[in-house]
Length: 555
Image (tube, rainbow, N blue to C red; front, side, top):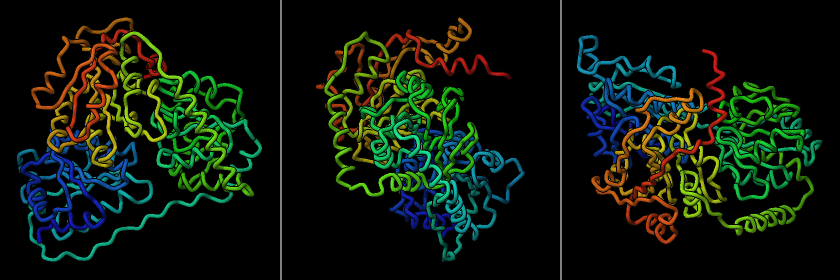
């Protein structure tokens, strides 16, 4: 058995299902052995960076580690950005890169690169295999490292001769068994006492780490009656049509969240699963925490107290921690009573929904709002990076069965296009809507062809304003001028889709975003579709806090 096959067989035994990447000479043995591994599906992207975002999205949603492969040299360096994204997102993605034969190291081989130190700062492990018999063990080490403790990406360089060498039957390999970190009883008791003392004068702020436990945090909110805001990455952790929902705090905030969290309606703020970085806190604005006591719950101890002083830190598995708090608050309360509380809130949410949309002029915000009305009840939005993301954060109302994803911490332009493919593979039955822009499309738009090739029924919504909108408006707000080439002559994205043989539609008015048209867009039997939305984009997007931060930055 070839060394690479033995290593991949271990990963398959742990539930790994996909290899994302772009084939090349230095990894051809890896791709060849997939013929013997039908359990492992290859997803061939159009760019290595795209494949990294696909892998990260798949892993984020399923919790299953994925493998992302790049060639030696430029194939490897193209994976550094998505590796850094996985590092920031704490995702166990296994990055494998090829290399020239070990016998030719240092002799000037084509695309020779010592990739290990390049990846070292953005992975939990980065090393080169130099003995073929070690390769299966090293891949097991990489897998175990990726999932252990605080999850994160790993990187292994596998020279082509290491992949190809026959090693016979490999040694038996084992995977670590991870267990959730039990919160400290003392920390739980202290937080529970503070919650009881606060009564109704508390508030919740949910980060990305709380999104896997939506039912749990909802029960806590309904039990306490506390109002709930989310960070931009936490958007979707709590249904935004719920009577207790405040919307988003941070970048592209909703006024309701800002007014409440900076107001005097609560004495205690409980933060769940957020690192409290720039985008989550309106550039670390102290008004979020001023005059409040703080409970901060996170599975990563390093995040507690890092940006704001915390009165009641709780380190451990987030769902366990919140459930233990619920248990202390509901001692003696019958389950039927709790269900009556939830039912009352559901009725109130239905009444809010009945209000219906208003009318407005045609622009990016209007298009996003209309798209929100057309989206299926179980849709997943995968939002890219650009001006349109601020409108999406602020104006999409994520309902109970919907999901919202955005790589706001380190995602590059186009990550929302690529990530949508990983999301669709993770949950094939859930409709996926990628909201992106023309600038993002020019970077990673060819992945719509990948979606066609794998028959992934993604709705790619491209906001086309013929400029790098966020950059343009940022410069105008900060400097009152910008270079002319931040804008360009409008290119028809629909014509590009047509040339690729991908379904397409165009909209230049709200009338062209009618519900009867959208029904066909979400027909999952018809494969992907590109919806080009042409707007002028002259309105200033809700990104003021970001610009204020840059204006005040000290370099």
